[in-house]
Length: 286
Image 1 (cartoon, rainbow, N blue to C red):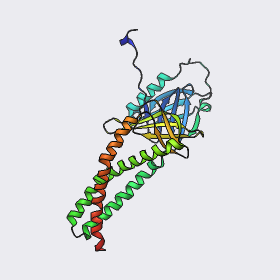
Image 2 (tube, rainbow, N blue to C red):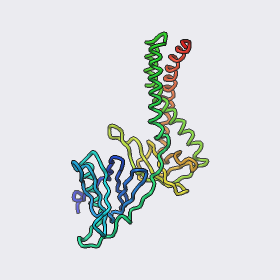
Image 3 (tube, one colour):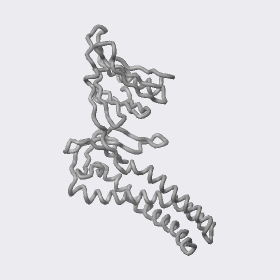
C-alpha cells in the first residue's frame, strides 16, 4: 500500500448535547451528564443513529435479549455533529452476525460520578453578576451626587477595562507563586490524561482539561492554559485537589509570568487608582 493509499485517520469526535456530552474513548462510549458518567462498552451497542427532528438527536440502542432494549438519547442543535459522531461510533463497533445471540447490554453499563469542577468556576458567574450590579449602582450614584460628574463618570467607566484584566493577571501570578512554593513541599505527582480541549472564538485552544486519579482513588480535573499532550504529569495538593499544576511547560510559564508582572500588575494598579478617585470624591457628599 502506497503512502497515498493509506486510509485517513478518523477525527476524535465529541458530541456536545443539551446537558449531556458523548465521547469515544478506548473502546467505550461515554455519556456525561447529570453529574454522572455512563461508560458503555461498544460491544453492548446494537445500533446508533441520528433521529428526532432534523436528525439532531443521537439515538443509542443497546443489545437486548428481549424486545425492550435500553436506549439513550443525546439532543444536539447540530445535525452534522450528530451524523459525524454516529458514523464514528458505527465504525468503531465490533462486527456481529445478524443471527448472533445478543446479551443484555444494559448490564454492562458502568455508572460513576463525574469529578468535581474547581469551586472557582462555580462561583465566577454569581460573582460577576454581583460585581456588575454594584458597579452600575455606584455609577448611578456618581452621575447624581459627584461634584465633577463627567470626570468621575469617565474614570469609573474606564477603570474596569484596566483593573479586571489586571486583576486576572495578578491572581494568576499569585496562584503561580503559591503553587511553586506549596506543591513541591506537600504535593503528589500523578499522570493525567487529556479529556477535553476548549477553544476560543477563533478556534484556537484556550484551555486544556486533564483528568487524574488521586492516591485516595478520587477522580479530579485540572484546567489550564498549558498542555496539549495526551498524558502529562500533574502535581496536586491532596488536601485541595483543585490546586494543581502540570509539568513540562517551564518556558511558556516563565513568559506568562513575565507578562503578568510587566503588564498585568501596572494595569491593576492604574485601574485601582482610577476607581478610587471617584469614590474619594463621593465621600464628602455623604
